Image 1 (cartoon, rainbow, N blue to C red):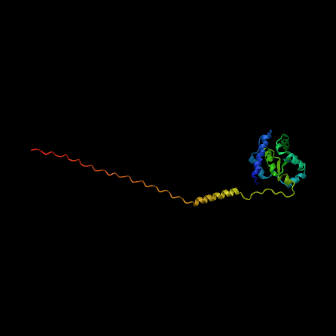
Image 2: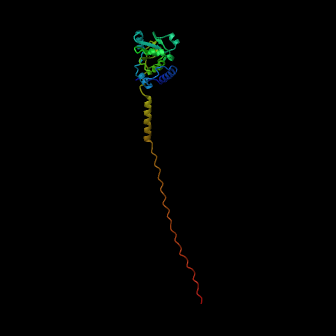
Image 3: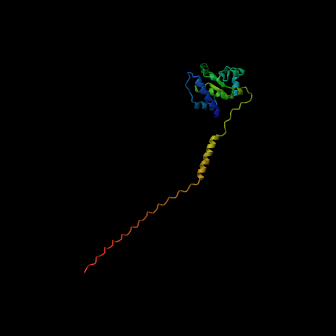
Length: 212
């Protein structure tokens, strides 16, 4: 499964939002969620390699049409033979959507590089057009004779490894951390004993002397 750079996803979302707000059409219901569309992109079966692209160009008119998403000025200066120019801002025009509705034809989108075609492809795919594909590398690599090297998948998920290592370090630290001694319980003072005071005996009244 191929990884998709975060910049691709951000670019795709921005293009989709801008195009959607400017060119609202009758096909205004998404048939795929963003997650489902990205999953299709990860599988890679929606992509056409530069080598496959050259082979398809040699078999022109056999159910495949290349769509050049660059500006008209770039298209005039150089294009793939037989490609139709539909600049990205016009991708949702009614006549263009009608073109993509021809399910007997496979439309291969390309820009000056692969990232330029990612957003339009995602938007059309979400709207339910299953016959659109991406040209890997874009126009630049298609015209280059060197072999195209697809982006490599990372050998390790470094984020997951770092999270696991951090968790292990934390658990080891907690295991070796000394336990603070419990605070001594203060003894309750003994109740104060009250010694009863002895009452003094009443003094006897002096006796009067008897007279003669």
